[in-house]
Image 1 (cartoon, rainbow over the protein chains, first blue to last red):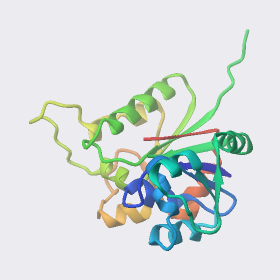
Image 2: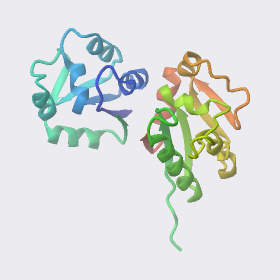
Image 3: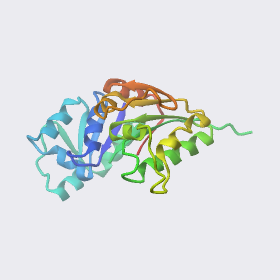
Image 4: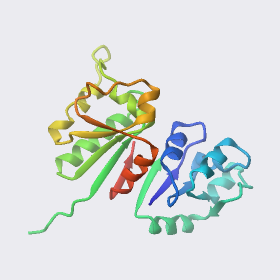
Length: 96
Length: 123
């Protein structure tokens, strides 16, 4: 089980590479430019959901970007939620 | 005598060799890790497969040749690397003459591979 931190916009190679590898049982945290993948109705959001991984959106970054109404199935978390996830998963992969 | 706890590390190379300093950094980390006799493996993913193009010639620019450096990996007991099959196909990269053994993986196999390591380092 892997915790993926996705810090790149949906147009990036990092985004593409991440959704290639992420799978059910994993979790993906959208942060930085990665928050744009949470926008409802976008191809990126559909692709991300299709991985079957748990999806999380880092609220401070999302609010900064103006992504205030994320798609269903994406859980908003604060920094403490981020920390909790790092405790749950023993390995982490940074995509940037 | 204290015993060293060995951790397994997977270096994930995702960027082209000369577009940024990331490929160079990944190599430095790989060689340093191997020099300390830690278990280290490499996965070339996405644009990272471009590092495996044969015939890289850095002489006109006088910079480090990533391809040639990768060829030195067997000296550090890294004899096999993992490669994202889809990306290798997309860029039509032949691995027949690679200086080490290459194992092509599909997306499911890549996830399974990653789960087997203590640490994942992405470059």
